[in-house]
Amino acid sequence: MTDPTDDAERIAALLDGRLDARQRAEILARLGESDVAFEAFMDAAAVLREAPEESVRPLAHPQRWRRPALALAAALILGAIIVPFVRSRSGSADGGDPQQFVALLSPGGLPSDLDATPWTTTRGGAERLTDAARATRIGARLTDLTVAVQSGDTVAPQIALTVAALLDPIPASTPASSIFRSIANPRTSNQDRDRLLTHGIAAATSLAGNQAASKGAWLEAARIAASRHDTAFFNSARSRAMMAIEPTLRTIRVGSDDWVGVEHDLSTLLGALGS
Amino acid sequence: MAPRQQLEALCLANLTAIQRIAGAVCRRHGLSGDEAEDFGSWVSLRMVENDYAILGKFRGESSLTTYLTVVIAMLFRDYRVQRWGRWRPSAAAVRRGRVAVQLETLVYRDGHRFDQAAEVLRTRGETAMSDRDLASMFAELPTRGPLRPREVGAEPLAGLPASGEADDPLRTEGDASDRAIIDRALGEALRELPAEDRVVVRLRYWEGMTVADIARALHVPQKPVYRQIDRALAELRRRVERSGVSREQARALLTALVE
Image 1 (cartoon, chains in turn cyan, green):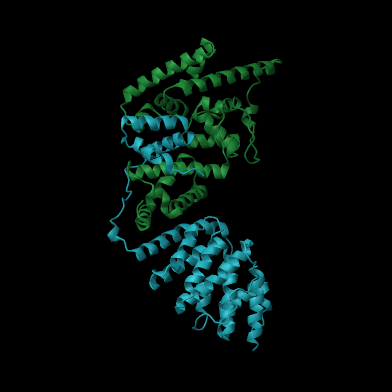
Image 2 (image 1 turned 90 degrees about the horizontal axis):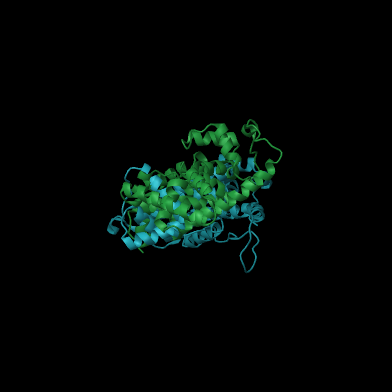
C-alpha cells in the first residue's frame, strides 16, 4: 500500500498556492510522471472546489487535553466508528455480552483455582486458531477481564493484554486492540478503565463475531458461577435462554449438586470450542 | 512529530471533517450507500493507524484541510485497488476522453450492463449522450475481460447498422494498427512536453477540467492557461508529425482531442 503522505503535502501546498517557483516546478514534474500524484491532485482540486472553506480544527493547545480524557474520547469515537463498520459484517444474533453475563453472577473476584486455559495450546510459535475458536477465547477473556476490573484484581492488565493479543491477527483490529492496551496501562484511572472496557467489549465482540464470542463469554461466566455454587446465575432468564438456544449447552448438568462436575463439563466445552 | 496525545486530539477534533471529505471523494467516484460508508470507516481506521502517522507527518506547509483532502484522495486509490485490483483504463478510452473512460470502467471494472452504465453516467451529469451515441463510442473501445464475471449486455449495439462489407475485418485490422501507431506517437509527444504543459493538457483534455478550474487549482490567472494550452497543442502536433504520422492524421488526432 502506498504511503499517502509522501507527496501529499507538496500537492496540497500547490493547491494552496504556497510553493515557490522551484518547489512548484518539482511538484509539477512529479504530477507529470506519477499517476497516483496526478489523480490525487485532480480529485483534491475537485473536492475543494465543491466544498466550502472548512471547519477543520487546528491542533488544540496541549495543556487543554488531559491524557485520561483523551483516551476515553478516543475510545468513544473509535467505538462509534468500529462497531457499525464491523457489525454490518458479523451480523448474527447477539446472545448477550460479557458484562451482561457478569452482572448475573454473585459478587466476587476470579476464582483462584479456575483453570485459566481450558483449551489445548501449542508450545512455541504462534497458535493458528479458527475464527470461531478465537472468538470463543476472546469472549471468555472479556468475561474474566470484566470480573477482574470490577473486583480490582491486579491480574486485570495481564488479561487485557491477552485480549489485545487475541485481537491482533483480526483485520482492522488495531483500534480495538489499542483500547485493551490502554486498559492495561497502569496510568489509566479506574473510571476511565470502566468506560474503555465497555467500548472495548463492543468493538472486540463485533470484530471477533458476536455469536461465538457471546458463547465463550457465557461459558466462562458459567464456570465462575459453578465454582461459586451460584444457582441464581443458571436460573436467570438470560442463562436459561442461552442454554435453550445452544445445543452444546444443553448437556450441562445444572440443577444437581455436583458443582465440580458442572464446572468440569463447562471447562471441557469451553476448551473444545476454543481450540 | 507531535506527541501522540496531540495527534489523537487532532484526529478526534477533525473526524467530522475527515468523514465529510471522504464522502465528497466517494461522490466524485460514484460510490454511495454501503460502499461509501465502508470507505469512510476504512479512512478513519487508516487515520488512527501507527499512532496517527498520517497526521504526524503533516508539516504545516499547506492548510490542514487541503492536506487531508489530498491524503484521502490517495487513500481512495488504495481502497479502489484493494477492492477492484489495479484497473487502468485502456489507451483508447483515455484518448476518447473522460466519458469513454468512465463508460469502460463502469462496464468492465464494475460489471454494470451497458444500459446501466449509460444511465449512471447521465444521472451523474457526466454526459447527455443517448444510449445509441454511447454505444458507438463503446464499440470503438477494446474488449476487456471483466474483473468479475458479469453480464455486459450488447442490446444497444444490436440496433446499430452493420458497417457493411466483406473485407471489413481486413480494413479494421489496418485501422487498429494505425490507431496503435497514432496512440503511441501521441503518448510519446505528451511525455516530451514540459511537465506543467503536460499536466495542463491532461487536465483539460483527458480529465475534462475547465480552464477556469485548472487556473484555480494551479493558482495562476486564466488567460495564460489558454495560451499555454494553445502552445502545448501546437507542440504536440509538431512532435506527432515528426514521429511519422501524416499531417492529416495528426490534424484529425488533435481535432478529436479538443472536441
